[in-house]
Image (cartoon, rainbow, N blue to C red; front, side, top):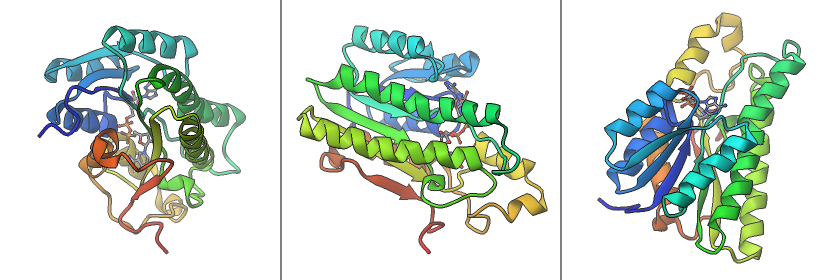
Length: 246
Ligand SMILES: NC(=O)c1ccc[n+]([C@@H]2O[C@H](COP(=O)([O-])OP(=O)(O)OC[C@H]3O[C@@H](n4cnc5c(N)ncnc54)[C@H](O)[C@@H]3O)[C@@H](O)[C@H]2O)c1
């Protein structure tokens, strides 16, 4: 299948979990890939395993790294799809979160998406494209065990709609949507469950819901990257097996 044939897709946080799975599915659907992460070993290994892929180190909280990544994308013919996926989870409540933890989470999960959208819009205007921002079900409901994380993902949700509307008003041909997974079986998801004790689990909103698999998110990424979703813009795509439906 060639659902995204020859499109140049940037995937951040590509070395593991949802980024890795999405990159593999995009490649299987004909995409060219520019993979970004701070885990160079795993990032390089993934690039080597895919037909048309290149890895570049990019700390998504660094503006200079974003500028360098976009310059590479330009050299590769220009970016068509940007998946702002990289993120971290810190398990701490409103009482136990330190200011340092708060600021670190906002910087890696949310400031990163601001930078990605800013440079992504600059690079895509005139040629069009699709920006896909990784949010979470934690943007839609409270999750007492992840105070800073919920706020960072809420910011991603709001910024996504603002970018979508701005680009539509400017007629840039750039779509921007957010993805909101529930618990998914990745290294991050597994670690959260492993670290949580019985009391903590009561503070997890979706504690009773089943865990999803990375492909459950990866196929949504392929859809949003492809022309199949050409009328989907400013939307929040929830993939959580009804965890937030009540
Ligand atoms: N797994 C879940 O249950 C779940 C649910 C909802 C949302 N998400 C979101 O999905 C995204 C991916 O999560 P995952 O489960 O695949 O986690 P993961 O830990 O398996 O992968 C995250 C990747 O991001 C990279 N990364 C971390 N900090 C970075 C930085 N500063 N710059 C560049 N790369 C960086 C890591 O090296 C890693 O490769 C995150 O934004 C996460 O918040 C995950």
